[in-house]
Amino acid sequence: MHGETSEDRFFRELGGTCAELRQAFARHVGTSAHRVQVLLRLWREGETSHSDLRRALGVDGASITRLVKELEAEGLAGRRLDPADNRYTLAALTPAGERVAADLERSHQAYQRRLLDGVTAQEQEVVLRVLRRVRANVTGRESR
Image 1: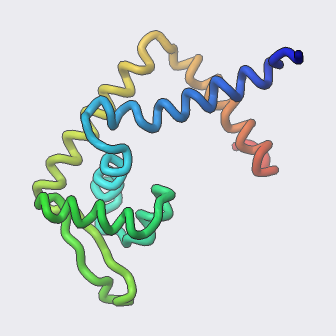
Image 2 (image 1 turned 180 degrees about the vertical axis):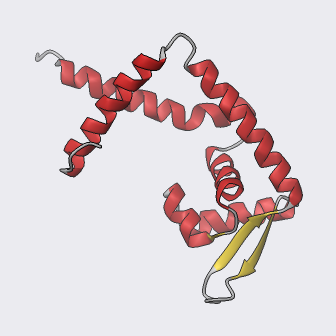
């Protein structure tokens, strides 16, 4: 039997942490991660095409359409054809959606502060440097 290397442990821990983080806040607020992502993306960026949402979230177009229609039915978002190219649908938050997204953003910021409790700014910087270096090694670019 072969033992686990330090690299194995590093990537297992990194992967597990990333997977848990993707779902943790959504569970915390009692909704789906994709719903949170759509609400916050529309709040931060304004009106956005379904295709841009699909790319940003890494899900299929039918899932985005279904999610935006749900938000629309709840009065949180509206949809319209893109006047520049009617093959595309644009989504935007309503005033009620803006309030929900702003509340989510405040909750998210507080949640992140709680997760980083006991982690110094210097420790965060070291982790960021390591992640940038690993990403640069993956993509073949120099880290920034």
